[in-house]
Amino acid sequence: MFVAALLDLGVPRGPIEEAMSALPIRGYRTHTFDVSRSGIVATRFEVEVESGQPQRTYAEIRAMVEAAPLTDGARALALRAFRILGEAEADVHRIPIDEVHFHEVGAVDSIVDTVAVAIALDWLGAEVVSAPLPMGRGFIRAQHGILPLPAPATVLALRGVPTVEDASPTELVTPTGACLVAAAARSYARWPAMRPERMGWGAGKRELTDRPNLLRVVLGTPDDTARRSGAHDADATHTVLEANVDDMSGELAAHVIERALGRGALDAWATPIVMKKGRPALKLSALARRADAGEVARALLAESTTLGVRTFDVRRTERPRRFVTVETPFGAIPVKIADGDGLPAHAAPEHDACHAAARLHDVPLRTVYAAALSAFAAGDQR
Image (cartoon, rainbow, N blue to C red; front, side, top):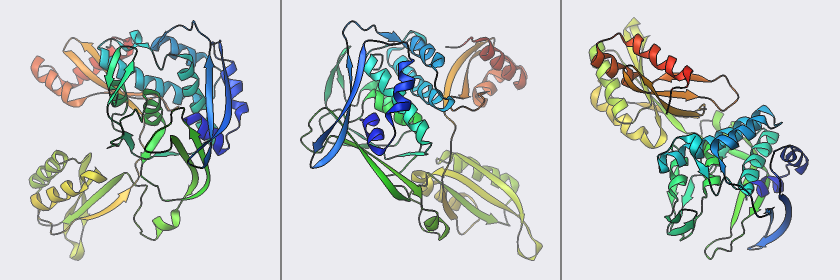
């Protein structure tokens, strides 16, 4: 459905077919055709697969994509998508990620779908904004037997992605769709502030009783006029909260920052400023998800001496991130890695874990940091 919607939007088949033909997978063919759902003419994209295809591990798929003649952007997005689902499956089955045998997504059709979407989105060059994903209910038969919906791997692939309840007794988000949205979307909104230009429809195979089985993609330009005029930014993902105070000690400011973080702030800080009549003061600031902004504002009002908090919505562009755990002489240390987006990779040990290990073993904190980075560089991870 994702591939079909992008083709219907106007992405040419040529770049997709050229790149896909170079992948070391055979025994399949693709074709597209129009179908009508609720009077809407949409595109269907089908991958017809011959029997006898092998199941593939995450490590095999990763090597395949790394060696494929793709653009840097398409390769990074495809690798990111497979990595997200590989980590989800590894968590569900509690095995190392390279040992994960993909079933549904390891099949040829899902590999084609994932790589084709990565190629199409890279060709468009657009920033992807996704609506919150609807989570159906009920059960589905899969390779391992009967699974509850949403499927366990789907849930874990959507870590950090907004989801909403849906009463439909069917699978509305598949593992392949989940990893693609999580890998591609840079922000989430029911409808971003934009000026629509084109629309594409991708049709699913099933006929649903409560809605047309369609995926819609809309191409548009950001509505900068609305943002400049101070209108509410429907595309915003986070909120910045600020308060100026000139009658609060540094110790109390540290406490306010701690309380803001405890109420959901992703970051909080204090900046020295000069207010009217030359009075030295502090500007207390916090960054929070829009859903948590109310609680963070209450913390600033309750714990500081300010009588008001100002807020403004912002959009936050984030690097894809993942975690691995490395083994060090001071115990297991989680390491946060930013990669998969074409930029230089960055690895950073988790401070709290390093701090606890340093205190437990009575060694300098920098020693634990160095040991964790050395273990990561050596590949001693799980």
